[in-house]
Length: 519
Image (cartoon, rainbow, N blue to C red; front, side, top):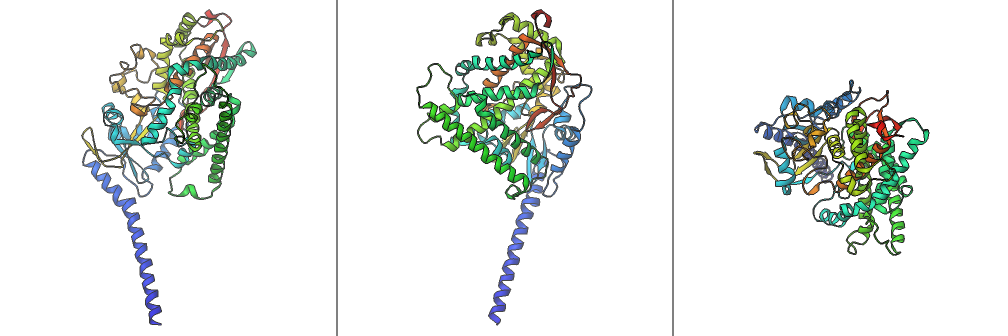
């Protein structure tokens, strides 16, 4: 009897000790360590809003973003930082350009000094890595180049890069031009003026081009994947508005079950496209055809790129390629509609270089459209598709004299850098493409001030495709239409993973029977 009591007592003690250990570990990770990190940075003069147990500053961040996006910007203004990144705008004024912000127990140091950004992305890039995306985001964007690290990332990039070389992309120009021409032909069917929700049309346009670039096939083969990804994106964006709870994604809630189902459907659809592409690849490759993404991965060294790898890379390309380019086209069209004087200058250049015929611009003609290039760059400056990026210190590192502990996340607010008056001048919030007249490097007071596609070795691999597609589409549109904002347009840039017009982008187009009408 005594042995039973002793055994029972020992079990109780063990359970009690385990409970103490768990409580201590929770206390260390959720309180002691954050307080220690906070003190470490305060000693270096880096401050920020105080850490709050478990949730950090998430509640404040979400509240500020919801309040900022509750009303459109009126009158129209390109001073969008307070609306799009309100927490950065608010705390930057209180604590300076470099400050702490807590996302749960994870610390992030906001860094907007171009010299420090250069260290992170170029001169000391080996000390930093891309951080792990939240599970829902990673599920959406795929485990491809966007999130891979180390040797596997380098190997995949080497295989995929030829798809995005200009010599290869120029072979896609006739296909892209046909797609744009078909789109504009539908706009002209009314014969007079027509109101178009351009954000929706541009998404369809980029979906077609991306599907062809990835698979060498038509939009019809890929549209199901885009539709599924759009639903997944809404779920991921909703998750951003809630406090992160570790392990919550494994609980079979209605949202999680829907997300799991969408993920399975997306993978199934991509695998079908891969099988179809593989069957077609057994036939002799068409001479002079553009090298598509999937074909390059399939022809890579045996066993180096698995079907699972291909699925993840295609998901990444579908997600990033579609939204980056469609957003660039949407914001540039809005800007040209807002600023008719620049629309006229761009159209004059297009008609002078490319002519007013229905023949699409050639690659050589596109290279000569300097004014249009300036306009696209200014659009990317004011409305970059990706408003921020994050890097994590792989080891203890010195950053501009600051001691950054291993594991610290560095938040680079691209939008804030692009809207920094000390770098861009007093007209920083004005649409002035002329600032790029001498090229990107001389547009601002610092060469690292313009980073819409990132910097260094992880610069967006699809940059050439996005710029080529945008330039071609805008040139054809300018050849055929003059346009203005619809009277009910409301200006409301907001973040849904990337920078979107919250209230849509209704634009009124008028066909140019006589090209001189638009000048």
